[in-house]
Amino acid sequence: MLNNHLYVVNAYADTVSVIDTRTNRVVDSPIPVGSTPGAAATDALRGRAFVTNSRSGTVSVINTYTYTNTIFGCPIPVGDDPGAVTTDALRGGAYVPNGGSDTVSAIDTITNTALGAPIPVGDGPGGLALGR
Image 1 (cartoon, rainbow, N blue to C red):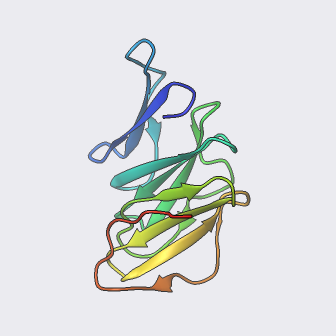
Image 2 (cartoon, helix red, strand yellow):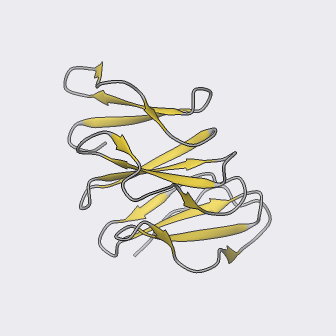
Image 3 (cartoon, rainbow, N blue to C red):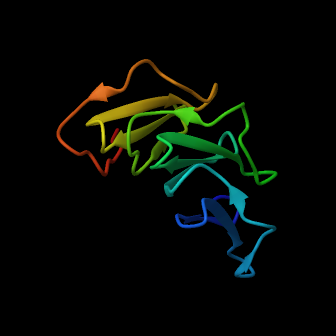
């Protein structure tokens, strides 16, 4: 949730709906993203939401102030079948496990680009948690 808004991934419609949690009403029209979105995470410092698109192997970036997709150019390419996403607003990063390629992609949330090649991990990564 960011600024009293809830971002809902609509996997079968390839969109994200935004709900104002103060009124429990949908804000504007659904935002188009990549193919089969699966998860979303927000970066409150930068006013962005990151949405994984499992069929496209990409991450879409939504401007949480204007509800438009994508802030900088095309969606960010990651590995095969990206699942969850977590953000580190203090360090300007996001991390995405790619279940189809057994990797984790690191994203620079300031430039909205992938940071190098995906990192090889175990078989079929799905969830992740960021610790300090």
